Each structure stands twice: as C-alpha cells, then as structure tokens.
Length: 90
Image (tube, rainbow, N blue to C red; front, side, top):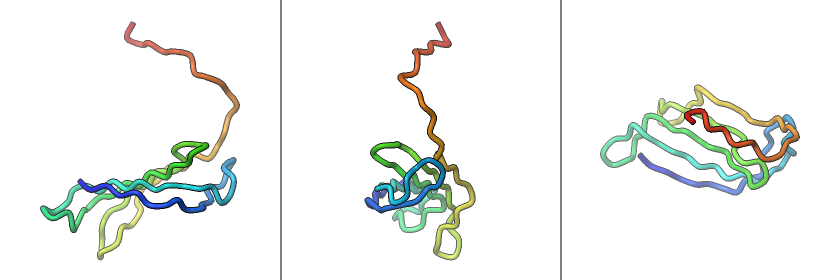
C-alpha cells in the first residue's frame, strides 16, 4: 500500500459547492508489487476544509495510467445541526 497527498488545488464539483474550492487529494494505492512501483488499484479522496469529503474515485492501472471506473460526488448541502446520538446496539 502507498499513500500520497497532493494540493491544494482549486477545483469545481458542481452542485452546492462553490467553484474554485481549495482541495487536497489523498491517494491510496494498493495491490502493489514488492517495490510499490506498480499498484493495480488507486482510490482518491478529494477533501476540502469547509465541506469535508466532496468526491471519491477508484481507478485501475492499465497501460501505465489509472482509469477511473467508479466515483461518487458529494456536492449537495442540507441545512442542519449536530446529529443526535444513535446507539443501535443499546
């Protein structure tokens, strides 16, 4: 497994997230060879200071590049406050 952090970058996510939001990208690579030079899978987490996680990607290594095969965007905001405690096992 290998980890990297990039940014901050000014990015657009659409929805309720303002354009040019400062974003850090945390990449987590796994299914690697012994030298961590070839990792078959990569997940990227797009994190902002104000909104938290706003995007997640999964990519597979093919032809020396990662190709995104799954992603989720969290760009809709809802008003609210602190969440009430939830103890389902109690």
